[in-house]
Length: 216
Image (tube, rainbow, N blue to C red; front, side):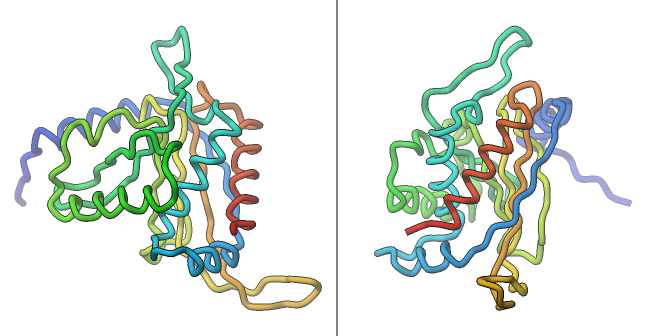
């Protein structure tokens, strides 16, 4: 038997996980037809990741449902954030980190792509600054690059919600009365019930699904 001492970051993450897990969380699921996303990605002037497309779609949908960008404060009030600071869960040599794209609601998809490229480069070493890891108001976690059908992620307190995305899978689909091959992915929306109620979450996830299925 051997032991591995926790780094200061590991200790901090452990405390944050406990704080996050204490929140009363619940989950909505939605299956997304990916055909529109695939075609939209082909038409863009730069080759962006599906995570980038998801971040842009989530940010635009939050504008319609601002409570999704709220956070729990001290038990007496909620904080309604005017700007969307999008956290992106990434795997690094230092473990799971959530760098933040600040003011994501002001960015075009090309600008979000540039931010994601910076995150990708820094993820190789995990050398993010505290400022880059702070201030997030919502989180996207995408494991679609792995053989993961679907998963639920822990809401990163004090945020009100997190989106988790599984892989695109080729499945039989019914279109215009015919069975055809298509691609679907499952999105899970995990929420803190103190901040977001079930109906609001359902409306948000329905709107996000519709947006992703009608891109371009």
